[in-house]
Amino acid sequence: MKISQTKDFEVVAKLNKPVHDLHCSLYPKYFNEYNYDEIKEIFKKLIENDDIIFLLLEDNHEAVGYAWIEVREYPENAFEKSYKSIYVHQISIIQTQRKKGDGTALMNNIYNLANEKGIDLIELDYWLDNKIAKEFYEKHDFVKYREFVYKQL
Image (cartoon, rainbow, N blue to C red; front, side, top):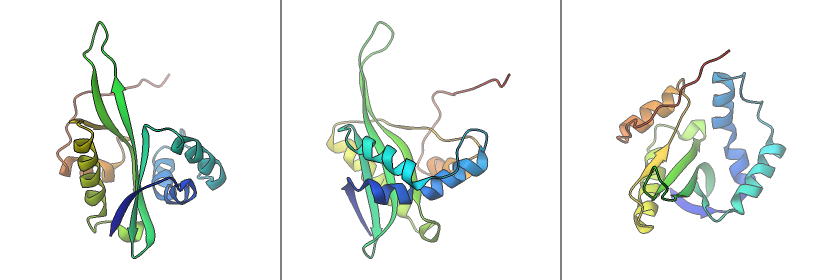
């Protein structure tokens, strides 16, 4: 297994399909069907941003997953002190590679990257019905410190 930073937006767009399809199946009201060409263009633009990092997971030289993370800087204001975090937007691993420790390897890589940057906070969110994500992040000792709620009218 190998994890490295990548700028290959085409590979990332292909690896996005499992997580996008999951979101679409759980919340079809909010998610469009997976469209490789459109998603590829979004990732192409994101990869140009210096605060966005894509970690590519390879097994025997085959791309099998990725993590999409962002270095965030929150400036001090009248309400809050300044701080930095690593925000995890997505982790996606192809179905045949799940439950083999690859997600944990990606998270460990994220923790190491945060340490190298002097950042001591990892943030993320996931959709409530995404039980796979919930169980995975609980296993990694993530705790809720804020809740996002809505009311459908």
